[in-house]
Image 1 (cartoon, rainbow, N blue to C red):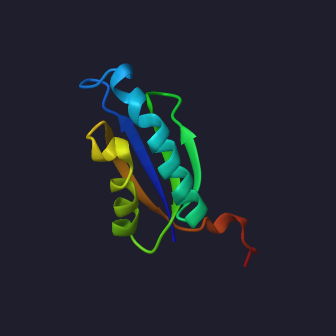
Image 2 (tube, helix red, strand yellow; image 1 turned 135 degrees about the vertical axis):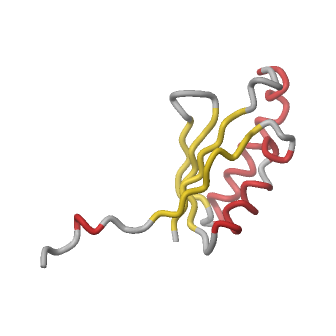
Length: 96
């Protein structure tokens, strides 16, 4: 099953200088999740600092477990705004 996770940096409590030391480890953890097949895609948000991540997982709990392993989430510097389960869009299938 696929899930979309929407993440937001906690910029009210932390500065860019606070984030900087954790960014290489954050990127490495995201690469690991991609290599495992848990993460399908990652985007930077265009509206606020943060990201969107497409997951392939068995449950919401699995996605949240993966997100909890991210260094910025662990440090309380990244908030999980939403984890949304997705289902196939039927409009592209055969007409009946």
